[in-house]
Image (tube, rainbow, N blue to C red; front, side, top):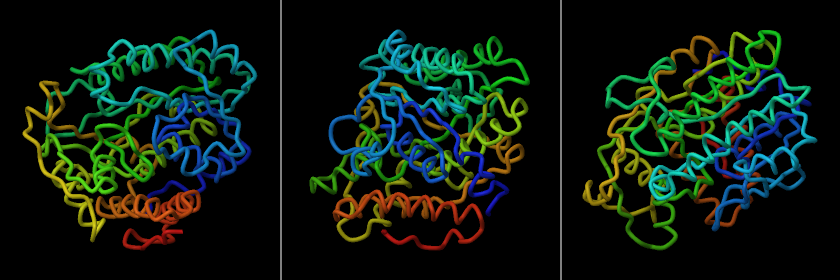
Length: 377
């Protein structure tokens, strides 16, 4: 279903000055690439990519753009080294994104995700041309009651692990800034966005299902997969990013009615178990694909709490923005597998990434259907 979001977002980003924090990360890299294709002038603030392969490196993301390596935990350095940035739009994605790392470094996780967000919002407040800010959090910001239905934007924040709690705190910080500093309906507007378990080409994050499977293919090993019966709202990276951009376009053009929190999750068919998604990846990869086994659930967790069921309700985005997921789960997995296989084959990943964005844009416009294929280049 094409939905009602134009594939060029009404031209809202042509010539628009956008600050993206976390642009060297997986989601930030895809968003930066898409924004530049839409004609935006993007400035990035982030830490250098994690060691090893990264989306940023293999797509030559920072070539030809203003890319600044600044730690958002350092308020003084951020204020001084980014003082000349005057953006129309700020999309804050920089974060410590790993649940299991948050158990190892809880204070660092809170410093990055909570204090870092406040530092970025203070920077945004100083921009004279600012019209909108989007803070990216997570579906894990909600107090998880293991409900079988999806969480809505007005459900309580919470979190049993440091990562989830940090994202709940980030939402509270965002709400406080919205009410305190972005409350003028004629001034710049502040929104937050919450997505599901995002996957796609170029993610090499630790303790993530598909990256672990890709690493196993490269190493010729069998990967142990934990928590096979946990249910997650899986979605290709371009799905929530299309929602973020649709919301950003509305903040830029219509303002206040679009402030506040928004969910961008998959359809019910995309909310499946870890076991089911692993099987889809193996099928999509084909010959030479990843081999895996399911580890004992408790030993795999190491005694660390992880949610069993997590779903999002995206009714607000569907009715308020006309946003719709464009990819079936098998289609999303197929695009992802093609990206990684193309990378292993030594293909031009900048061209492949842009081709997949163009393919997704065609789905948004109705020029293609879900079953349409996308060439490797």
